[in-house]
Length: 131
Image 1 (cartoon, helix red, strand yellow):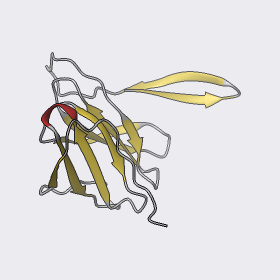
Image 2: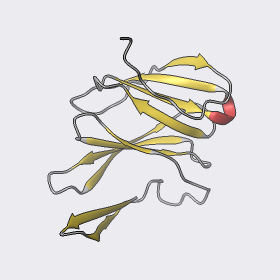
Image 3: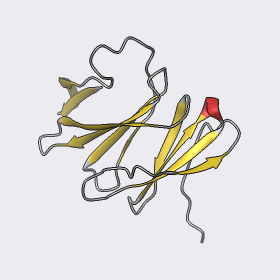
C-alpha cells in the first residue's frame, strides 16, 4: 500500500505499508475503501491471503496497521461499508459467499461473528437507499 501527499498538483510518495504479514509469499491484490468518517482504510487481499486489512488514518495522512481479518472465503473480490459505518460486507468470488461484519465506528474493528449470505460469485457490492 502506497501513501502519497498531493500538493500544488504534484504527488509525492511518503509511505509504503505492507498489506500482508511478514514472510507471506503468495499473490495479493484487491480493493480499498475509506470508512465514512475518513478515520479508517480497509483493503482486501484477494490473492491467496483472503483477508481484509484495517488501517487507521493518522492526522498526517499516514496509515497505521490495526488488524487483519479472514474474509472466511476465497478471493474477496469486493467489499462495501454502509453509509452509517456500522456494517461492512465482503464478497468472496471463488467461494460463492458474502459476509456481513458488524463494524464499530469508533475503533473500526469488525465483529468476530459475521453473518453469511450464500450468493453466486459476487464481484461487486453497493449499499443503496430504499427511497
